[in-house]
Length: 304
Length: 120
Length: 134
Image 1 (cartoon, rainbow over the protein chains, first blue to last red):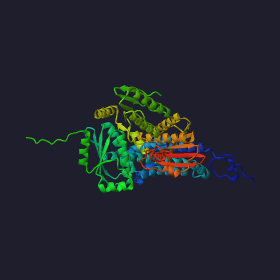
Image 2 (image 1 turned 90 degrees about the vertical axis):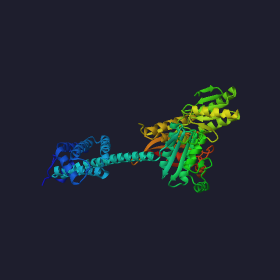
Image 3 (image 1 turned 30 degrees about the horizontal axis):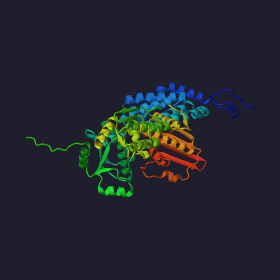
Image 4 (image 1 turned 90 degrees about the horizontal axis):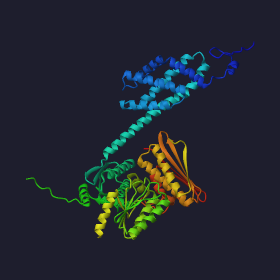
């Protein structure tokens, strides 16, 4: 029996030899076909997706209208990324979206979840469309899957980046609030340090103090470390650095709250406290500062 | 690069620019000393406000300037070290030990006036 | 926005200024704070200075780097000079030293987040440092 020659692409059974002759359409052609399909069926697929989102109880922090609006934007961006095969716009959109929804309390697993759901909804629609042409389905999936995975990745990473940025901002704000540099008199700053000093906080402290010295034109700074949780070599060295840097800005530093025992320990370890002006307590430190600044301490007259 | 040196009474004020090369710093050092001798200045203010980086060479040069000027009987004050620069300097271990420092020109002058009063 | 790497040949002392200026610009472009940009510029100045003082000439390469989602700057200072005979000695010093002798490497290490050095006698030295954005 003669073998049949099949010259047309498309659905229908073929024998092996002929199908080998049919070279794959270029992946971008397939993607175009895919994108057209996604656009044509936009309304239906989007509805299906939104349904799946509420089924999975995601985005509960948002109203139905909001979800619909965002879903539309995400869907369109998704399809556009597939079409253009570029992901920069998508990345920007993802960050934008994140900026909007993070304050609403939307979490990472929700964002990743909805993107994966969209991927699934679209994949299923491809199965449905090409179910009679298994080979074509395979080729379409070959084109679709890497792109879809890249999209999921881009959106997730964009979200996480934005989230981390917000967290860093908040941490910075907390740190600044917890280390106020106080101006109590002209040319005199007080910096009460309370709590744990990790290297990052130590650096931020020094930065804040130095800027404060310049802004307030301080000549004397009293750093009170009574409230420092753990005084060790690292913290002590940061303190020494801060004192040295302050001097370069023309300010004298008085350190208060350093107990004799701790001072002794630090000196034994090899921390050079020699150049540090230390006074027992904050009150004593302030008095010494005032003396340095040339203030006269006068008794307050009783009101008659 | 020319560094302007102003004379204000018994005080010389040298304003460093950013981007001074090693050669510039060297010639500045010589120039300052010459001027101190010439005008019999009692004090020198070196204003480094414009320097956005002070590395080990710059720090060493400032200390040498202060040292040489002291040998001539005059006092040096370094003013205008920026907060970020001060921070970087202490990381490098450059503390300008033994050299007087003040916040800015105004403070520097006040410091010198005070010093002159005490000497007289 | 700079792409790729920035190479600065270090032959004369003006090159030290050039290298640190470019370092500051790149650090600022990458979003580093004023303090961090100054730290990077200062480290580059010291590294360039070492090249000039001990090898006569060499090169500084500045590069933007990324580790997962964190951005950073990398500085590679290389020369084909005499090399450092005792690296451990060069890296050791008291915490606040006057720094009038030696290579200032401990200072560079304090200024940056990561520090790597390879050196071979008569072959040269390569210092690689990185700083990551907060």
